Structures are given as structure tokens and as C-alpha cells.
Length: 150
Image (spheres, rainbow, N blue to C red):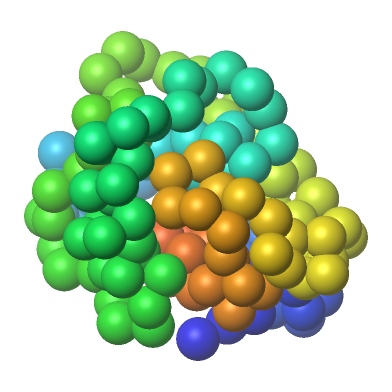
């Protein structure tokens, strides 16, 4: 698994994103390329921006007990897996803007480094280790970049 805190691995993710075009088609799934980029941005928005309401009570407990393990482990996601409602992008987006935002978030994560996130409270899963943060970011990016053949 790539390390989102490593400059070379970050450069590889960015290079793969730069290969996408506004007309790139998925190998599986229903999202357009700009929706996929916006979908990937949601993960970073939950870390760096305060625009998504945090789950509370029973929902947060379910996320921590059942979903967290699937998200932060090293096992790749299945194709056409279920997505949380807040990650579903239904409207159209601007390809260049979403691509630029994603690249910016990826670079920001690398620059801030693993110590910034180590032990930081995630939006949905409680405190995560630097390895869990890496796994979550890395495998999500890889999954969707492979979805679009880059």
C-alpha cells in the first residue's frame, strides 16, 4: 500500500490523477469522472473542512464498530461496494475544479505529515493511528483511480 505521507507516493497519486480527462470513463460503477473526484474530496473535507455534520449516538457507534474495520484495514475495496450517503455525488461537478481540489488535499496531507494526523479524531470513527489514516486515504484513492483506469 502506498504511503500518503511519503512525497514519492504522493507524487505518484498526483501523476495518476493528472492522467484523467473530463471524458474518462469508469471500468465499473455509475459515477462520472468529476463525480468520482468530488466523492474522493469528501474524505478530505471531513478532515480539513467543517462542512459535513458529524454522526452522533447510535450511528457513530455503528460506524466505529462495523464500518471502521473495513475502511482502515489494508484490504482493497470491492468493486461496486456500498457507499455512505454523504459520499454519493448526484449533481454534476466541474472536472477541473474537483481535480484541483483533490490534488491540493493530497499534497496538504503529505506536507502536514503523519504526526499531524496520528491520534487525531476522525469524523466518523474516533481517534485513528497514522497507519489507519494512511490506509483510509491510500486505498480509497487507489480504488477510484483504478476504477478510471489510471
